[in-house]
Length: 83
Image 1 (spheres, rainbow, N blue to C red):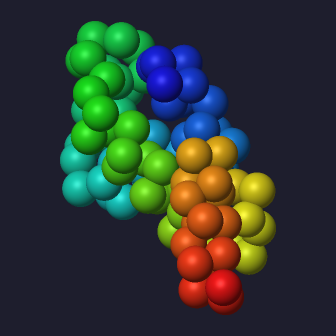
Image 2 (cartoon, rainbow, N blue to C red):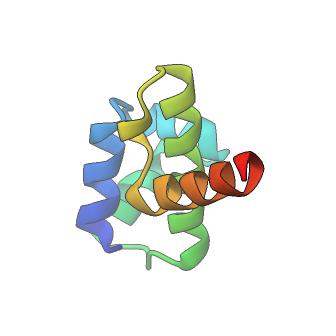
């Protein structure tokens, strides 16, 4: 994931920069800097937005909002649980 993908996922989730910042516990400026490439997008940022995408998907009852990697992992978990 790069900065463009990060921004695209945020927009797909229907979140403003401020809303995503609130969910991640950071200031809006931090999100702006990540999306602009001023701050290096690290694995923890990717994991954080993927986790937010899962939460938003559940809240809105739309599994397609979850990031693809999260959907794959969720399906694998369901298969483990259901046998």
